[in-house]
Image (cartoon, rainbow over all chains, first blue to last red; front, side, top):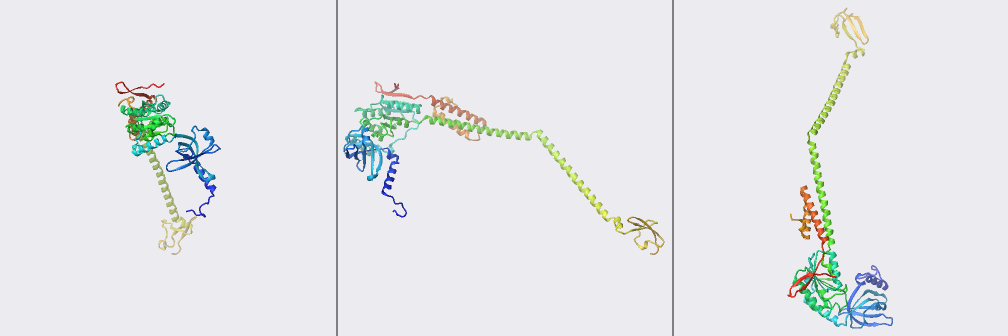
Length: 404
Length: 77
């Protein structure tokens, strides 16, 4: 549901332009082929022709302009004609009409041929001949390729050229056949049966170059469809141009748009294989280089280890150890000596500080009896009249005891 | 070991891929690795030669007088 205040509101012109742009940027719709029946055909004085192209369930308006009609080889268009029209789809804004702008027209026949085509197609489809499940996968690298086509046709030369370039490893077995005319359907069927009987082909291409509906008609015949369906060998159909689809195309295991496309689809391209070989060669080179590098690394490590263990290097190592030890020893000795001398200095200082000489310098004196140099430290040590010597800082004083 | 030159393309290419797988295993001895490498290169060259030298063979199917099927070389002008 659109809410006007939320969704943008377009003008009719904008909508029409949008639709037109949408149609004109669609790849399919800009180069489309449509099959149907003409109705309501009207040509105006301008030379432009308008009609409706329809089938059982739908219809599309068409316009065939004068310049396109002049270029076209189709006969005068009239109601009831079954045609294939090619062109592009667009919107004519003025009347809001979707149209197929026709460039080319191919007439499928007065309806009769077209009817037979549609009837056979419906019948075979109902039998399941077109079922995707029936379709067999093509061999990836066929050794033998069977071809059903005319010996004289350019299509054969084109296919051989493609095969020679893409996949010369293969062998081709040609089962020649008429590809147009009254005898063609039976001939094509027989050519297919012969290849199956011979049995060597891994895949079969049924091909015919481009032509009119009548020229390609053999490939719409039931006998050909049945021969393709009963082929034990997978069949690729390559009939006509891109736009032609015959009953053979529907029954085949794979449809290609042209004989050349069929040959391309049948085989791989050895250019790819050559590329793969080259890649493998490069990888071989890279891998062996890795191996060699790894081996060289292992060798380096081993020889390094070896030289580490050699007698000369052991000797050198021991020499080095000796030097280190000597050095340690020397420095330890020096350290010890330093410590010792420090201790001695320390002791000398302490000694010095306790020295009686210092005491004397402070004003105290040492008194001795001259007689025996005995130090007097008590009154008991002296008698009156004893000779004393008093040592002071700067000398000796002689004295005699008077009283104690 | 059969001669490389007698191998078909498929056989040679398969062996080439086996040589690659063997070399990818990092535990090969150097001698074995070199063997794989040389064999691989020989196989690659053989594959290359087979492709370069290949020529499309074209035959035509026909029914003989006895009603047998046979193929004969087709020479297109």
